Image: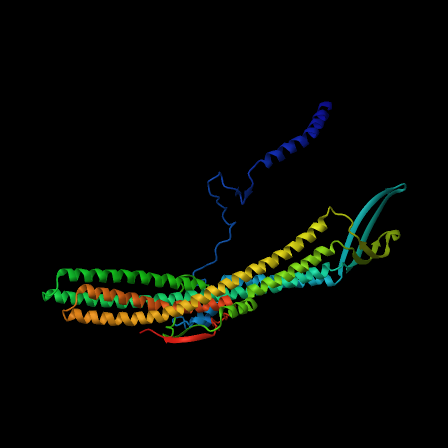
Length: 494
């Protein structure tokens, strides 16, 4: 019997040690998730998550591949306004910024709760037993309590917190407006790039047809004995090059279509087509001076307005930091009742408090917090000044690019007209037997190049106009670019 007691005492003393050893062993075991190791087996080897722990990708068979129902009916004849409308609804950047703006608004509403007192209700129930000189006393108690606390005065901290949240909400919404203009510009640029690619492919197709005609003429002359085989070979070379350029341009059309689909928030393989835009554009340069456009940009651009609001937000945060150096006055009250099986512990209770907190010393943290808040305000002012210089540079660059694009359209029209006349003359001379194949192919190459430049020049100008409207801050959500122009000419394909 004595041995049994000894074994029990030894086992009792060794139990904590055994438990500690088990815990230590477990602490060195690789953690697991879903029954599989939570890390990769070794450096350089990929981690394979257990089945079921990573949510599957939603079915994307038709996700973002089709147009919205109200636009799908004209999927084969979308206008610029349609493309912009779809982009604003579908583009993930728009949804992200809108969600952020909504979050900021809710956070602002939450901070305004500091104007109201905080009222809480609590209740506790307990059963206890205590030992007295006369025996055991058992007590059952239920104690509901309602408490109130209210900040009476904090020398601007509460108002600063609410003001900072308010300015942040305005700033985030202005950022959302700026993102809308970014999406519109992105969509318009992709739209004009696709239209330009189609026009370039169409112009190249005409060049292929003309090169084929030149080859036919060279064959006829060679068969008639008035031209050498060199004429035929040169014409074949030009035709092959034209066909190669057409294949390249056709590929550009497809990639441009995918880029436009992406800008619209659709999958790159979305099925839609654009309506043929008007062949006539009123080409012109900006009627206002660059200086006046810069002034307008500084006043209108939402990102510039957001920068100014950020300064106000940082100033409110200075108020919050400064208030931490001053006393805070609070009021509190509570009322409750104890219910107990012992009359001695039952009854009503209440309290009213008025508290004053005076900061005396906290390791200079308040001083540094205030200095940091003032420094952040200086940062926001410097950031706004930096943005002003960037805005002015962007406006001037876009202004010059629009002027250059306008001049290029006029020059491209003249170039196309001259190249067409030169080609007509060279083709007539070759057919009449007084011109060489080299003269014909040279004129044909110049005409092909002129067509390509004329096809691109108009849409490059349209893109430049949209960019200037964006940089000035007036690009509309329907794709409109209200920039007054000096109309130099009315341009269309010749």
